[in-house]
Image (cartoon, rainbow, N blue to C red; front, side, top):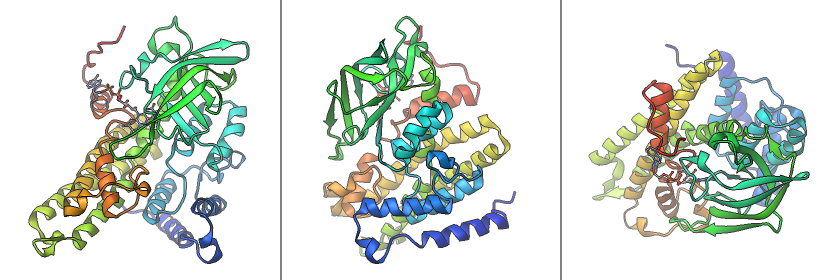
Length: 403
Ligand SMILES: Cc1cc2nc3c(=O)[nH]c(=O)nc-3n(C[C@H](O)[C@H](O)[C@H](O)COP(=O)(O)OP(=O)(O)OC[C@H]3O[C@@H](n4cnc5c(N)ncnc54)[C@H](O)[C@@H]3O)c2cc1C
């Protein structure tokens, strides 16, 4: 088996690496606020054909021909340099691809371009106090009143709702239909009197999570994605993108390489930690996970090129499991290497999920946060059930709530 990219793709990677030398910005541009610098470089990436490369130009993308291998090269190189590119936040990472697949023409034109430009920020409203893994039991209700939906109920664990302008989420619109059949996917403007967002403090010290309360909140009737009662299928598309983002092996590789550096630059018994046999053993074990995820990702790409849908989905699910386990191992090792510095509390700049702050307090935050992704986007036990049932054809698990 030849695991190397062909000459044409090697040349494409070189060209991209040249382009990425433009980040970080220099001269007067380097004095601009961080968000402005990111906006400038992202725009350049779109013009050069690398950022949002498969998204048609009329929706704000680079309008390139779909190409799985180019997509993988772009993701790898942007991850390696940390340059602002596609982004993995809820808007560009989750909602935009969902709208491109299921949205009406009007929704695509109205929402996708400003979402890609980060002018409209989104949060995801699925989970409720009584509906997490068993999401189909959600109760937050939307009732059509003339040309508007009227929404009442509560969402929880809504990441980034404090900063978001809009929420995309699941609401019960057909109370007489059973579970999955009664749910619709709605887009809701958060800036209105019927909505209250209350932050929840996490054990990292950050405030990413929120509760969102709806009291006669309103959204236009045409802010429904897909058909009435068919929101479940739309949400599966969003979830596919979420699991793909969490399972991305580039992030694992970046954090693993940083842990190796940390092992080189910290001391144990007066010697570099990397010379300690126990540390070497742990690093070798983790590298096994990282390489397995990278290989699994290559299998996923091969299947995608061949159009073998099921062979794409399975490695993707496996990658989410590998990556969340491996990230816990990596961050736990980094935490152990810190010694007394491990007692530092995370600081404000460390709070962005898996922030790239490779400082002692940043490693502490990453260690504490590493437990979250094993729950987000479908808890590990649920992933195992799905892999067993759909992937391996094992008998279905007992569903206590199934009617
Ligand atoms: C970092 C992070 C970000 C998140 N962001 C968002 C967000 O933006 N929007 C949003 O809507 N939600 C978000 N969530 C919520 C997340 O989707 C839920 O936490 C998740 O679906 C699990 O639901 P739960 O917390 O209610 O746990 P539960 O469903 O109550 O599960 C508790 C435990 O029971 C296990 N379990 C449950 N059912 C089964 C079963 N059938 N078989 C075996 N084991 C089972 C689970 O694996 C878990 O260990 C986020 C969560 C995290 C951690």
